[in-house]
Length: 131
Image 1: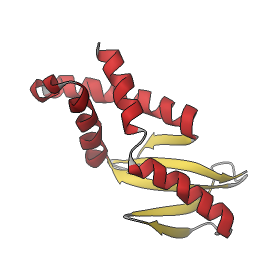
Image 2: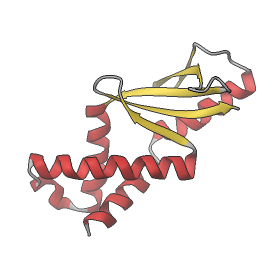
Image 3: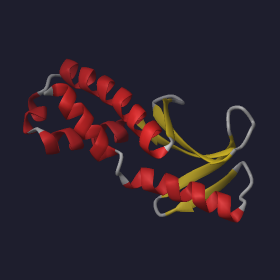
Image 4: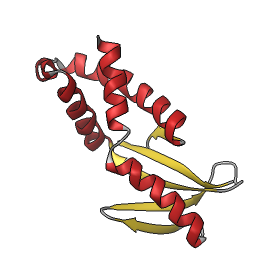
C-alpha cells in the first residue's frame, strides 16, 4: 500500500503547475533563442536558462525551497490517504525520501525533467532546451 501510494502521489505531483511551466519555458527558450544566463518569467515562476552540465546545449531550470516541495508532496499523499496526518516525523521523513526517488524517476521518464537536491535546502528541476 505504501509503495502504491508513493507511486500515485508522484504521478499526481508530476502534473503540478511548476512542471508544466518548466516544459513551456524550454519551448519558449528554444523558440526565442534565449541565450544562457537569462531569466524567463512565466506566471509566478522565474526560470533560468543555462548551459547544460556537459556544455552541449541549454537547459531551463528552477530552484524551489525544499519545504515548499515537501508541503506539495504531503498534500498529494493526503489526497490519497488521510492517515498521513497521523504520521510521526520519522514516518514522514521515510515517506518523503522514497517519494523523491519515485518523483525523480517519473519526471525523467515521462517529462524529460532532471531533479536534484540543492543548492542548500532547495530542489532543482531542469529540462533540456537544446542539444
